[in-house]
Length: 315
Length: 279
Image (cartoon, rainbow over all chains, first blue to last red; front, side, top):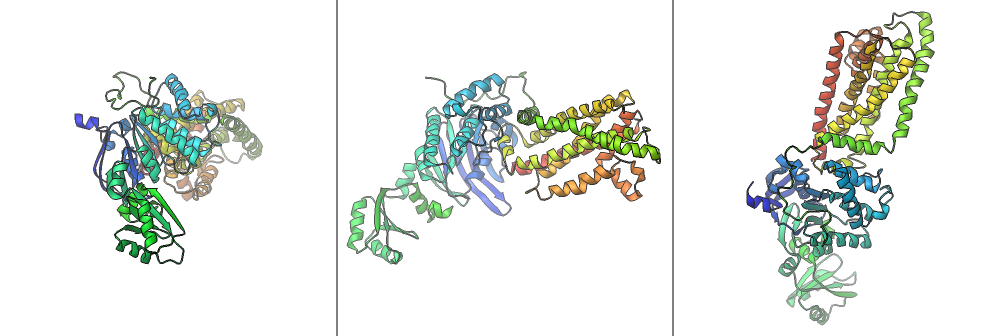
């Protein structure tokens, strides 16, 4: 164990996971720095969850190097897991038990003292705004509450690194914002977070740095802003045209005038630093959209630029 | 500023390993505690079964059927009365049935419907700790049930030897010889389609043919050969010998066979649990 290894929460080189002939994770390299919020952005099936499970020491790697806290997951899985907080994609709570008991049994898995668990439970219930439901059974709780309980459970051992696999998938917008708020606070307090998501707004809000994954490979990495700057223009114009319009032909007109254009099944995107100017340009070549929207470019556009598909299509 | 909630500021290397000499709870014991917390919510139903079933069995098979058998006196039974013969067998069979029921649906549920096992192996616990922890928990439940059953035997006047104090332990071992292999197998299943087959083709035939109700020597030779391989027969030989005072050196052989079933079951379980939980 060298000093360099100790300071890096997670380091992967050539990391690969295959299931039969399927390469779920294909030769990826990445490093997570202490205190950062690191994201895996990609559609379903991109290899995000498989990567997370390898980091979480619950799935042996097929090839490549992986260290977590400088330790080898194959040899030191139990020791590493003692320092991780894991929020899996599915909550997997003990629905027959009440909220407090869920935290209790989980704390005991880490061999925490009963008095210590009781103390932390009160703190965590407060933090996740579940104090009033502490003695209620888990089964009837809302999806958002179950998610928050899963996050509270993951923090019972005061982990050095928190793994969140699609933390807000399936939550309504209000519940999602509450989870984001709690994760943001954790990050501010200095926690190291690794999360997977297929929501670009989640990645933009929470991640200092992220990698974009597609088909088991990392297609680019950087901060959300840097990725957008690298692959996109400042603004994007979305044109919805009448169903009878030949989108490719229309796009051709725009391209001839030097605009960067992407054709989607239902609309045309124009990448431009000045959206208004691009829109009047389109008007000039005779396009009559049913609706036009000028917006800031997002990670969704980055993904499109990198893979030629939208995250929704790819999923 | 208050202390950060729920996490330590990274890095905190060095604080991870407890100082030498600090007591750490064995990991499988933490799993036993987990089952105990869940059991607190359902113990009433389980107590009813533990109390009622031995009494019903002994009344119907022992006294009801027994009075007919004893009148005919056709077979020479070890304990004299049919009640004395059948009672230790019923105790062993009850343990088999509880163990089988507890090992199939609850185990598959923990990975398929509730997925709780995946959460558990994300902690310092390993798949093998879940295997051993579950069997240890079953042992505790089975011991409680067997002790009560033994007390009922005493009340019915069946006990003929002080060795009977060992009968609950033999019963527990017999229960584990079912639960360990069955839990391991259940963990390898994608759905519950074959569970009813296990009950119909393994548990029920063993219950009827392994020497609970009549000595296996009464069976046709090929069936007898099958019966004496079954773990239930070994358990019954043990409990009957200890209850009626006819135990001998051959009982060490029965213990060895049952221990082999339990160990093989746990090794098989380590394999199926690891495959399922650490894909």
